[in-house]
Image (cartoon, rainbow, N blue to C red; front, side):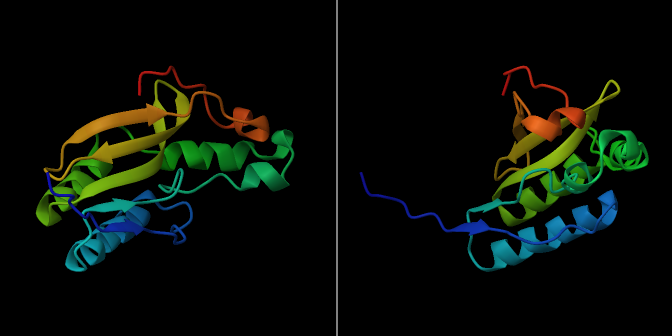
Amino acid sequence: MANKIIKAAAVQIAPVLEDRQATTDKVCAYIQEAGENGAGIVVFPETFIPNYPYFSFVKPPMLSGKDHLKLYDEAVEIPGPVTEQVGAMAKKWGIVVVLGVNEKSHGTIYNAQIIFDANGEMVLVRRKITPTFHERMIWGQGDGRG
């Protein structure tokens, strides 16, 4: 059996802070760029949409409520408009996409990773099982399903 070489794209860019849709549009532009350059898989950072909660590093928990609520408002529902848009781009370019998001579900935010296959289907949603240190003030614990 012959070895198949798959070109991978690791995207390390900044999100559009506190703007889920603008960050999703940016993700889609980079999926297109990766596809145009022959990548078979493109990987984005942890909690890229809408952004990593850096405020939790610099503000005491008592002062981060407003930031936490904004993060919740901009977090991603799975499935939802973000997954539909990203899945459509994965399908268009025939590329596997690995995307980190803040997932909101039943009043909680999770540090989640979504994997889309080259047909644009979500094949895995994985939640971080144990957020570390200050992250526990932001994200709920995953359940190990992914």
